[in-house]
Amino acid sequence: MITKPYKKLSFVYDFLYKKNSIFYKNYVSLINKTITENFIENPKILDIACGTGTLIKGLKINLKSQKCIIEGVDSSKEILSIAKNKNKKIKFYNQNYTSLNTHKKYNIILSTFDSINYITTIKKLETSFKKMFLHLEDKGVFIFDFNTPYKKINSSFAKKNITFINRIKNNFWIAEIYIKEGDTVYKEKHLERLYSFKEIEKILKKSGFEIKEIYQDFKKIKKTQTKNCSRLIIVAKK
Image (cartoon, rainbow, N blue to C red):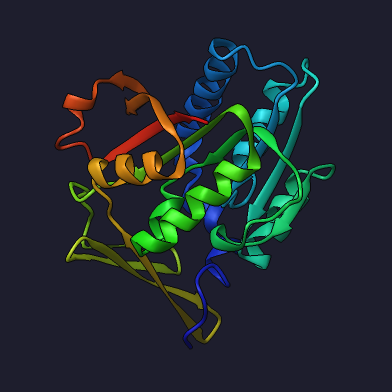
């Protein structure tokens, strides 16, 4: 049975990606560092494509000593139900990138775990970055990561009742995910566009952002070192 992305995957997502706990901890540390270096007081954070709310939960715990507001956005109602259960007092919005409108401004916007790669055209990515720009206060910071055309993936793997079949074609990562529940097998197709650093840099500049820092595996690198990196983290400023 074919179903939309994250309709079924959302309920096994944390099980599949529990090994990424270090990734989230490193992100919390990077966000903390960015808050300190940019002299951000009373952080107002919006996590776009927040998934199951794991990063929000980590930030909530880590920033509890500060006067802090954290909110989340995701286009999947199923995945938001899990995020809400983890984060009882957090405000969530069921929206996507191109229609983002919370009627608020923030001093930090996040989009992690290659979420922006789900935006599969340059035009939609430009629209999305402009939406984020409008939702940031002056001197606000946008932190995100993305997969590049140097991304390498396993062709397939299976875990319990879940099977992933992955392939890359013309700078697109196509993942077919089969989830078995009883006698029914659900199929989800996920599509990511792999962006080069130059593409991202150009769209950020066009949207009004300035790149302040670039990271690979949470280690700061120079622009000249971005070649051959499969995933990059960008800290950009309004």
